[in-house]
Length: 236
Image (cartoon, rainbow, N blue to C red; front, side, top):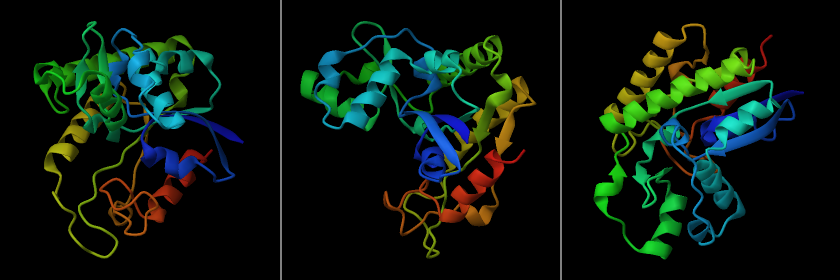
């Protein structure tokens, strides 16, 4: 069975999990390459305030910069990446480290510190975060190459959906900022590593599912998209 590790979001995990065709080896969510490229720093006081074991695990992985050890462990056949979770801001912590300001992290942080100084926030689509993300991508290529895993890298090229499966326009559509940032990321990937494998989708699949188990969202897609993901990653 094909073993897949994921650095990304539910977009990739929902396609892989429970299929019986692909084994989900590891899943690092709610994290940006812009965070992973910075120095590790674990805030146990924040993690202790997070109720869900899964949420605690993903926040810890972001703090530990666990992506690099996961790659060096070389336990996967494919590393599937998507960049939907780059919608989150980053936060400069008081010790100088940088963490992804996911909902889970923010919830724990508020219980420890209350509200934080807005000057510590690195906004999602800012130039500062973009420069950190590019550094993270460069390090990813280096680590994948050094460990002999560069041929296992797959980018899940999804886009924010503007409509749902009933034909309704989603709130805040057409998501020009979000999709513009994704386009910039995909273009940079192709410029720096033209041979990276991309998963691509027909527009008819890039639609939000009104019956999705996580609710309606511009990145909670109809089943046809996840089926296309599996078809593509299992192609020989």
